[in-house]
Length: 201
Image 1 (cartoon, one colour):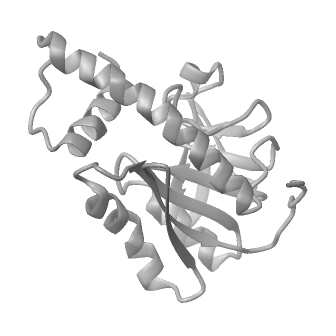
Image 2: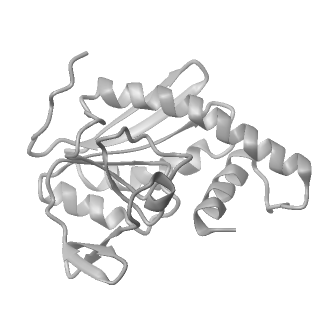
């Protein structure tokens, strides 16, 4: 099984409070499939939330990080920077911080990221890349980092705490918590040098 699906199974387990992955159980696999379908419904709500917060998803200057086919919020013109980009028909790539500068690694190619536009990601799999968002805050770069799910999930506090650490370090970062139709959303947002606020609601 590929790494991307393993990340999703890990998040599924956390949402249900399960301690192990049981790939031999048909019931377990079926429940995971239902969770993926439910996430698609939550994604639609989250996409609307992003647009309400003036994030123009259908824009190349909006860059989604580290997501794949089943948990992306991207639209056709969203830029994708992700090690799971191939699942979206894009190249695999990833941002790494090196000596205080963001680099894009794509296979054997390494280049400095031209940090412009708005960076987004949601429900991060780990804390590995949160240093990039600290860089965004310190350099006045737009980002919106969020978590969302179903209000009955067992890992809501864990997911919120995962990104709330950044908010606690920087006063200028805003936070927001909302629920809608059984979906919860928590985000932290940095508004830097705004380049692409073209959404019409």
